[in-house]
Image 1 (spheres, rainbow, N blue to C red):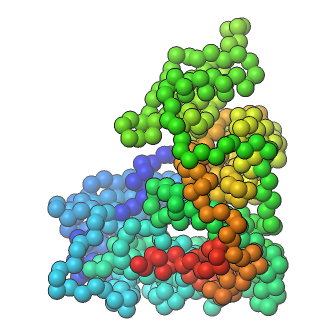
Image 2: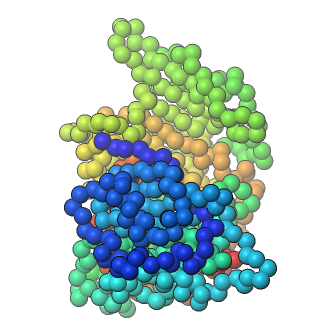
Image 3: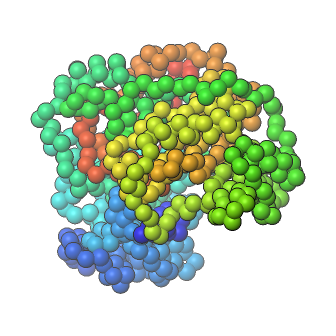
Length: 554
């Protein structure tokens, strides 16, 4: 059974009103090894709380607000956890994630605004932040784990929080195995400017390591990368805020999820961010019809939205009638949308299909749902005989070509095939195939962040759900974007700029892969790859390097 959790249960945060001296209190003379033990059973709520208090003495100043057990299927690392949240009177709150069997602290974070420095206090230096982070690790990591770590910030964080609003200094300790850095493993901390640890995260794989004695030479890997790496050229939203701002879109070269970007150190094949074999992607529009460019979108009424919905429902075989249910969402300055429920007229008393269509106040067809299939089901059947991924792609393609016929020239199908393991998982839990589509502007894609999804039943091949809120939330018009004729470099030059700002290295690599119902999870066993390592960044269309790492520090 799949268990849904509250959103705060997976997004931890804590306040920063604590004193640094109390954060680093000892654990009663005991080493962490005696506090965190290998348990064969799931800890009770009481046991988890007691272990958290032993490792983090600061919890003594807080009152427990609530605790929640979260099944491992919900978590990135596949581990079940206890999540506890704590409040302090007039002092904010904090959250803790613990391994549900060992009691290890996996995440610890303040919720709230960072305390302003007093007039006599100086802003923390990077060296001071390193000392604070090193001392904190003694409370939450074993001596054996700490012995396998790099120096602070010796290697770049593979998943830096360059969009975080948290102020402070990032400190990253990278795990080293067999003398090889493991960029996705180690400990990540943020030390606030007032000297307090405001974020801690453990990343530690227990998977089997590949044999490092069988790797190809670095010179051969460099040649493979030159020949087989293909960063995408696309419009990227460079804003670090959640709100979409059209003027923030820029033309860039960067690696997206399914682009060939790292070299398998044993086979020499190019891999994508999922660790799967990858080659240059083909991006072709589904048709030739391009909607007229507009500088602004006219807002429509509910009656106008209903007329649009009726036009769409007629594209389905059979006769559907409105079921009398029209739900409106959004009010005031919020974006409005209307949900219309239609029922298929069978005439023979048999169970009929129910279709939900949502039209937003820009007139965009943003949602389609057939028979309200529940995405998180308490019980599911195993698919014994289903359709292939390519058959699902074709079903989704026909649907999009039919319902978005006026946009066929600006929509393309994402050229992606999941792993055999992922397909097997889909059949095991009767999950739909999620087929993705992207948008083009002047023939150029808009990037991973603007894909929309078409869910196809893996057994019947029917399109059961469509989520497309991207079209109406992107740039307001083509004129608000930089034109492609201003591009100063080509793919070859973009790769040269990347290489100038990074260094080719042999590293362990643990990709995030697609899990059930859109959840990300870590690949069980790490890979051994050659990849260009350095600060997080991309190449702008004028050939200049844009560093997200430096942006994060500003």
